[in-house]
Image (tube, rainbow, N blue to C red; front, side, top):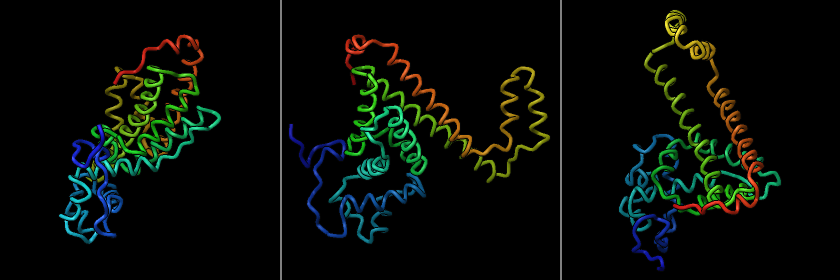
Length: 253
């Protein structure tokens, strides 16, 4: 069935209308939306705010997008385009590691995109390019069919999960500083003494975390997990014969 301007759903299923004004287009709208999302999050974004920043009327935006959801979908694909990865990297592990690291960096720059990844269909050209890059690297590693889909999901889940945990950690520390809450030496010591007998490993970990550099430790954790993940994927391929990979059931979505 051919796509048409009346198609519902994703903005990518509707052709972009001809430009009415040289100063306005989908690209201009997205360029105004992303900085607002970066600094103020979803609450700061509105059609009126975008129009004000562009110096146009809010009504003029609706020739190019139908709703704020259209803007968010376009904005998500815009920032996905910042993720650089080479599908032809000779070493698939190096290529996949670069894809994971660059995706993490992008999500830390654009935290709002974490939510959008879970609620948007991701049908944009940059989303497709990234998916194809990851699948190409993993197929060269030896994954196929359902295993290829699962391997890609494993990488994506690790990156997104790591960023969610890092952002939550950073935000918690920020709220503590802003509210005046501090882990004082006395309070921490008393608490750790109380729990050490029941949870000795956890107590030692909490004690060792005092004064930790969040950025450096988050980086270390991510690299450790990424190294384990890549080693696990390589071992999985090595342990599976080509015939077994060929016989894997096709992915269903």
